Length: 335
Image (cartoon, rainbow, N blue to C red; front, side):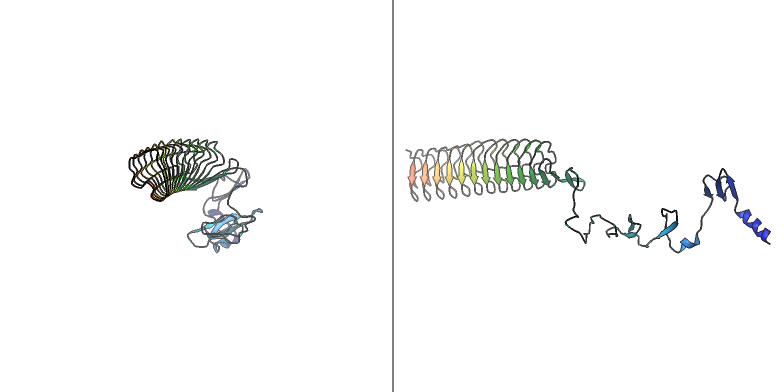
């Protein structure tokens, strides 16, 4: 009976030895142990998982959890993708627990810049070596040698290449700046068109929007100096102050809509709500007071101090009016 069983087993399992290779179910083993067909280990059947081995060569299995979305972590455990395994150090998309601010952080440990992306597009950059800080879509994305620049907002300082010491805060601030330096733009579309103008400060929505090469200008207030392109030495503080100025130089406007309509007039000073508001080309005028020189358009060299002083004047030149509503009715009288 023993010989019969041996014969039956050998008829199903053909074991051959060729060049130190052992084959089970094959006459031509290609490896040290070559099994032609399925391999069954009853001890592993109960685990139903992945077959692995340890450093001693001991074979065992990792039991599957049965949950479709579970993944295999580096420590050999199955868990949901957003779960922290015992040895995991990854930051998770659904938040982390047990963090220590002294050792846990997001960033780099070498001297390389830290880049941010959203939708695989440029979303920010922090570079300690050049002093560049950028947050927002395309902000400072073309910077080459420009240093100590700060850009916060979409397209802020987008085209800057070599300009330095610039600060842009707000979507569209200093977008077209390339080589301009020491500019400050705070507000949506502030100094947007500036290319190489230097030393400008603009605060407020659309302030100095069209400035390209003008230098040493100050604009504070929504729409202040909005249309200035290349003129320099201008100061506008107040909503729409010097809004229409294009080529006028060395003008100072303090107050909402002060010198709002001035285009090419130069060397004017207006302080007060709507002071010199209608002036277009008049130069060397001084208006202190609410609506002082309100209707002046082209006249020059007038001085009006006081509430509505020279209110009606349009073309009268070289006049001096001091006091509330002084010379209120004068239209064209001069000297």
